[in-house]
Amino acid sequence: MKVFVTGATGLIGSAVCARLAADGHEVTAMSRAEGVGAQFTARRVARLDMAKALKPEDWLPHIEGHDAVVNCVGALQDSPRENVAAVHAAGAAALFAACERLGIRRVIHFSAIGVDKAQPSAFSRTKLEGDRALMDRDLDWVILRPSVVLGGAVYGASALFRGLAALPWLPLMRNTGELQVVALDDVAATVAFFVAPSAPSRLQLELAGPERLSMADVIAHYRRWLGWPPARPFLLPEWLSTLLYRAGDLAGSLGWRPAMRSTAGKEIVRGAVGDPGPWTAATGIEPQSLASQLAAHPASVQERWFAKLFFLKAVIFVVLPFFWLATGIVSLTTGFGIGKELMLDAGTGPLAGPGVVAGALADILVGVAIAWRRTTRFGLYAALALSLFYVVAGTVLLPELWNEPLGPLMKIWPIMALHLVGLAILDER
Image (cartoon, rainbow, N blue to C red):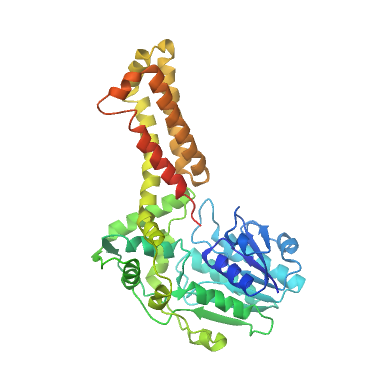
């Protein structure tokens, strides 16, 4: 069959593309991003932003000629990069209308567990709107509502679990619901089952694992899998939990995708539990336990690297913008006189003051570029170039700085190394 898969760079979408291709289907992987992760398994790649494809006509040229559509697109919370209402409701409704117009009857749609029971956030409300838009269409639809999906590839909540597992102490939050985590392989196998025209349709199924676990239980499983002893738990004060969620919202407003945002705080109270019985009855798939899926894929050194780098990445991308912004502000304020004296010692004459100002403004621009996710990569490269300029200029104009006991020029090299680390771990998916 020819299958069109939206959200092909996502955790679920990339696994679905790989599974369908392995089963012999011709897959078109749709994503708004360059470098689609499913490009090695997909026959074709389509570039389309679901948040902007709000009319059936936007979809028709992309999905025409396909036998089935699998919608895996999702967004946690509104931000400069995300619009949950457009993605979950308006864009999805346009896609379903286009399918009906072209006679593509088989549509498999990913929702989220529990949205039909309670909608504590815009995420769950808009997910339910998308579900209803599909059910109103004359299509052979299947709505899948997975719990927290865990697999080899990770980001978002699944990456957060591994990051928490790497901490020597386990921070716990109040009022977190239980989880029936589900294996990514089981989710992909479910799509492979329902994509067939002969498969049952007009079903709403909860994809939930066989056991109820607390967050502490999930993280304990990952610590054992990674080969580390149990961590000592401690309860986060409520004010600190609130602060962390707001910090996540701030990062989201800058275009980043942190797992800890206010939407996650609202949804996690409900938990992610459901009844896997109808799923098993319809497909014959027996969901794996977390222990069994981890045992099937032993942890490698790369897994341990990722877990330890998870929170360090956040630290790096807080420290680097702060470093550049602070140096620029200091140079324009309390350190202006010192900087001007250094420039005069270097023989710059009347250019001393303007030179300090120019350097300070360059530092501030680099800091802003690193903080704003769309320009982070450019900011990191600009920081490397500016650092090299400072080394060369310092060596030519003030070579005695190499002999300074505090090493102002020597310290540039480890700073540059940290920027290279930032470039290496920048990608999120």
